[in-house]
Length: 252
Ligand SMILES: O=C(O)CCC(=O)C(=O)O
Image (tube, rainbow, N blue to C red; front, side, top):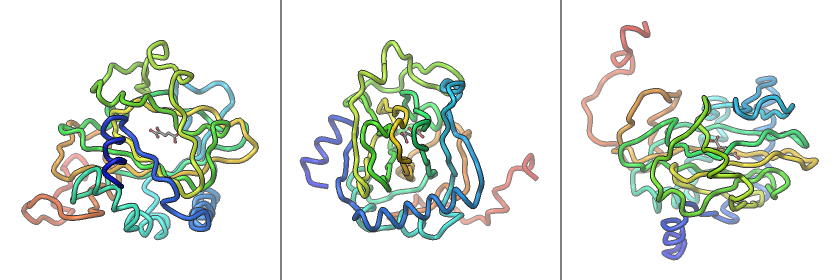
């Protein structure tokens, strides 16, 4: 990430790292995602506010528990170099998820900030979307409101916490078409979403959510397996405890 890239990220809230991986590497991960999806069977992650129009989207979470390929990918030096340029020397995993937006009926994501799902005190949280196949506009590529991260946390509506459509219509957002191997990084306050996949090919991605380990979650709602894994640097000092000592009595 050059100083110009970093300045672009600071003012726009996102950065598209073009060609971070080669199309050949992307094809290998694409096959991993589709194989995992086939192994686990049908799923649908269509958001509540988007249900009812016959669209669907396959997903799986914490995929480094399903395939070592994703563990290797999250530690790839090319990826980590951008993460540390944005977050700082210490980078911690929050969670990850794969998505396959199927052809023609691939569900859209309404415009939203990620903040309401896992608010953090210092807003260090970012997302990185790895593209394993091309994502042109007609495949429902990511769309953002550049600079919208500077508005701070916004009022969200509905059980899925999307942004009001009259203020943040998807038609008014800037599409970020991507090629296989591109990775888009964005701040968790950036208003973002994506349209329906109306093309005749699936859109295949991995989304990794990352933070500075010194940041403080404001609630405990979005815990997941593998959360807290260090991808770069070190976590703040803490007294050693076995994992079973941290289990709350209500969980036993
Ligand atoms: O993959 C996309 O188009 C957006 C996904 C997203 O914003 C989310 O899962 O929060």
